[in-house]
Length: 352
Image 1 (cartoon, rainbow, N blue to C red):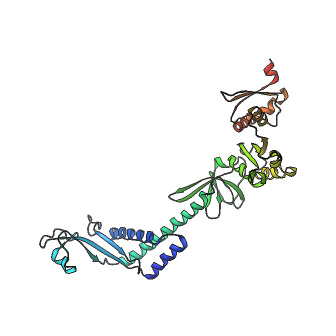
Image 2 (cartoon, rainbow, N blue to C red):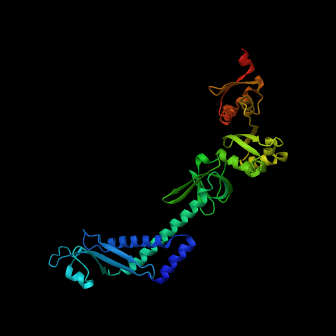
Image 3 (cartoon, rainbow, N blue to C red):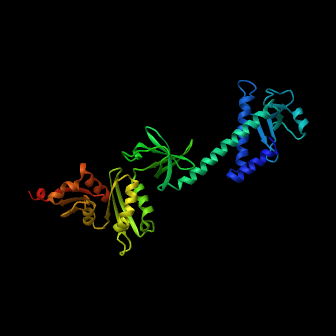
C-alpha cells in the first residue's frame, strides 16, 4: 500500500461520506485479524501480543510483536518476553516490566495486507451505500411511489424503485389484480427496515393508506388541507368507504373528491381496477355519521348507545339487503369507518 491508496481513502471520504479515520481503524482491525489467521506461530498462539501500525500519511503497514521486558537469564517465553539487555539495545530507557514493540516482517504479509485493505474498503463502501439508501427511503414511509415490477414469484411481487427493490407480499396485493414484469405500478410504502443484508422495503396496494395518498395526489383541496380525510375502511379489490370533511364551508368535500364529471375519483377507481369507492361526509354527530356511512342505502333512524358505542339502525324493508351488503360487506365497512358497532334492522323487523 502507498500514498495513492491514502489518496483513494480521502476521495471516498469526500464522495461517499465515509470518514477516513473510520476506514483506517477498520483496516487496522482487519489486518490484525489477517495476521492472527495466517501467521500463528503454533496451534496455541494467535498473535495475542501483535500490534498493527498503519501510517495514515503514506499507507505504510508495520507489524509489531509486543514483548514484556524481563531480567537477563530469566526469559521464559520468547514470543511474549524480551531480556533487559536486548531491550536496551533498542533504547537505554527500558526497565523490567516495560513493553517493547519489536517489528516483525512476516513473509508475504504485504500481499495479504493489500488484499485485506481492499476487502475492508469494499465492505465499508457497501455499508455506506446501504445507509444512504436507507436514509433516503426511511423518510418515504407512508408515502406513494411509482416503480416498475422487476419480477413476480408465487409469494411476492418485487418492484424496482430505482435504487432498491421493494417487496409486496401476498397480503399486500389486491385480490385478482394481475402483475407482470415491466409493468409500471403505484405502491404505498408500508415499512423500511435496516437489516444486516441492507435496507428492506415492504410496499402495499391493499392498505387504506394507498387510497389516502391517491386522493391527496388527485384532489388539490385534500393536498392543501382544505378537505380532510377523517377515516378510511377498505376491502381491497372490492370496496372502500372514505369519510371527508371540509374546513371551508364554501367547499363541498364530496364534490371536491369526485371532481368535474367524476374525473378525479374515476382516475383512482381506474388505478384500483374498478374498486368501488363510497365517499361520505364526516360528521361529529354519530347519528349523522353512522347514517351516512351506510351509503348507498337509505336510513330511517339511528338509535345510539354511547356507553357501549353501539348503534341500532332502522332501514326501509326494501333497503335492508343494500344496507347490509353482499356477505355483510357494507355494514362491516361502515362499522370500521365509524368505529361503532352497528346492528341493522328493517322497519318490519322492529315493528313485529
